[in-house]
Length: 409
Ligand code: DI6
Ligand code: FE
Image (cartoon, rainbow, N blue to C red):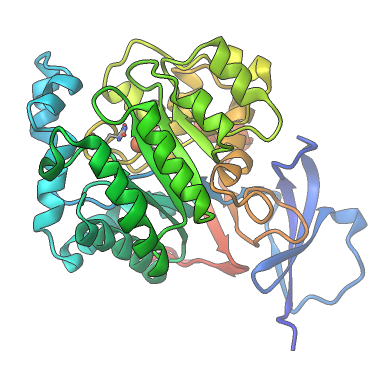
C-alpha cells in the first residue's frame, strides 16, 4: 500500500529550482519520503491528505546540504590555532609535522566508538540548523584500516541520526609518515588497493584529493582520478586553496563533481567551471576566515562564467573548526560577495549537484526527497544574515517532522 499523503499548506516557498521563483501562497504534498506535488495552494490537486500541516505563512526552503566536511576526527587543534594567532602560518605548522598529521595521530589512536562520540555533536549541530544531507570525508587515518574506521564511523552516524551521509575517500589528504618522500607510491597504493577494497565494503561514494604543494601534485591527483573512473566512482578535488597548481583545470577535464576552495583560481578556472556540466565551485569561507587568508575566490568571474556556486562548512579541526552552515552562508555573503539568493542556492540546489544528488535533493520539486525546513524568518535573506542565531522552526526529513528534545510542538 502507498504511504499516506501529507499536505503542508499555507507556506511561502523558496523552491530553489531552475526557475529561481518564489511562491507566496504555496503548498506541498508529500507521500512517504518523496514530494508528490508543489505549487500555488490555489492550484492544489484534489486529493485527500491523511495529515494536514498548516504552516501559518512561514517560509519553507529545501533542507540544507553541507557538501564538504571533515567532521569525523578526534581531539582538536586549538593549540595550533593559538600558534597561528602568534603569526606561525598553516603551511609552517604542516611542514613541521603538525596540521593534518597531528589529527592523523589522534584518529589512529581513537577507537571507533570514541571517534563516533566525538563527531556526533558536530553532526548534531549541523542538523539543528536544518541540514539533512552531509558529506563526510576520511583523510585523517591514512592507513587502510584507519581510513576504513573513519568511513565506517561516517556511515554509522548516518544510521544513528536523521541525515543522509555521503562518504568521500580523502586518503590523498597528505603523505603519511610511512610514505615520506614516496608520494607516488602512496598514490599507487590508494589507487590499486585501498580504493577497490573500501569500495567493495560499501564505504566510498566519491574520491577526493588535496592538490597543493604541501600535499599532492596535479599528476598524482590525475592518477587517482583515472583509477576512480575505472571503478565508476565520482571524483572531487581540493584545488587552488593556497597556490595555483592547475588542479581545477585537470578536474574539469575529468568531469569532477566539484572543485573546492579555489582562492587562487583565476579567469581560466572560472571559464572551465562555467562550461555546461562542469564541476560545481564549492566555496569554503570558514577556512578563509580562520586562516586569515588574503586571497578570495574569483566570485565575480565565476558568476560571469555561469559556474554553479556551492557553500559548505569544511568542518575540520585545522582550517575550519566550526559546525554551522548558516555561519558559512553569512561568511560567503559578507566575505566573498555572494548574494543572499546565491548563498541559499549554494547550500541547496548547487550543494546537491556537488554530491551528484541533483536529481533528488536540494530543490522543492515533485519526485524530490521530502526534506525541507520551515523557518522563523520574514524572508530567506535572514538565513545568511544572523550570526550565532538559529532561525530554524521545523525540519521535515523523508516526509517526517523531526523532533528535538527541547521542542514542545
Ligand atoms: N583543506 C582544508 O581546508 C582542510 N583539508 C584540506 O585539504 C584542512 C584540514 C586540516 O587542517 O585538518
Ligand atoms: Fe576541506
